[in-house]
Length: 85
Image 1 (cartoon, rainbow, N blue to C red):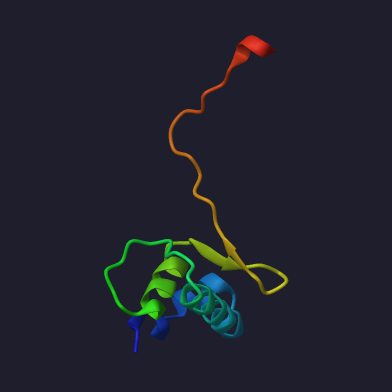
Image 2 (cartoon, one colour; image 1 turned 90 degrees about the vertical axis):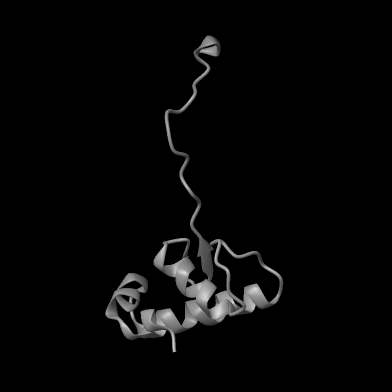
């Protein structure tokens, strides 16, 4: 069993055991259908990938129980073209 599932941190991060279960099932289905992992993890087990995606805040469950991939915010200063203002 994956140790992260024994802790309340991952349950609280998602919002409860039911939501955690739904998120894991939906993301596993996506990975098994060919979706790319959002974390770089050397493992043969998709379950470990899903757990790391949750712990690293890469995925979450929307209000309609669909999986949402959280976009990474761009780091560093933003570039603005002020010449067209």
